[in-house]
Length: 405
Image 1 (cartoon, rainbow, N blue to C red):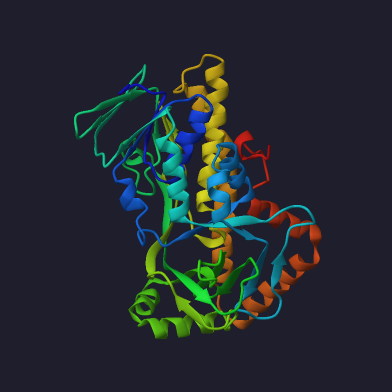
Image 2 (cartoon, rainbow, N blue to C red):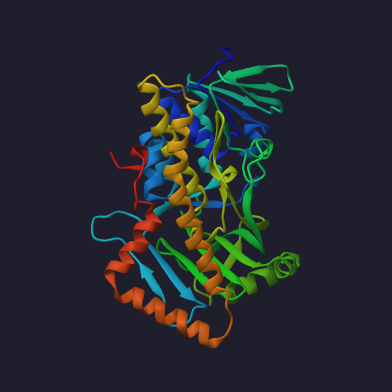
């Protein structure tokens, strides 16, 4: 095996593997080092979450050749309904005539399977699974990563894509702006009696948002949705301790029996919620992407989409620089990547954090004020269009890979 590649990507999850594939399509080779095995990551029940893929992120998948594999598996999001506790005054976001869906919902497992299948056949990617990193070294002329099995991988740029607890970020001494929401997201799969009509629901309660995300009907024709229910951690523990019937009764009440009778089709899983944003995302021959760079509240499902915008920006910066003969680890190129991403990341994360806090204020008066504001959004097409562009990821300067061809 050729132990030298342009990039050494530590972390082969959805962001890390998308980066490797996008880089390979641009003629940039990569090692991908992942501590887990593909079979463990894609086993039934290993990850019961589903992810909303924005229009811009879908363009990225199209542009790197994944559309054929993924298109039959995603449920279009034709509308988003936002409501304060199912009270009057909700906002409905719908695309204009001929604009296509607002996004697509995919099971995380399906995304991983498509990414891993594509990576297996890509000659520009050397994939190291079940691998433990023993040493990372960055020097004037390149980077080295020593694995526990004795392999030493070399490249020009080290990319940290290991997620929120990134050891690469920690080793470089990169600090975080971070806080704990003291909330937990309960994730589950549901079948329901009434069709969802390809509508995603975001129901805000003072204790936390309750999201219903549309999935394709299953093989038996049952209507399905993914549930993401955010609650204070102590309350979430109690909810998880309920038996299935009692949990479903609570969930049905929270959605005002919107979909009729509901049933669980996937185990309930719980994820603690925190905010973290790296104070910088580059270093000497180092770049961070995805949750290694920024982790946010799952409201509006923007976490993975933000990471995929990192991918598009980094590949574009590297590709342009390498065509001019620059080293992938060139400090000026990395600063350009960081500057490009800084404003987008800060604005998206600040808005999402603000929404969480705004809808978390209890009481009738705050609820009335929120619903008044939502009514204004509903009546103002320009303002509604702004929020639709944000949901689609099509605002601001988009990398070429995230634009429609």
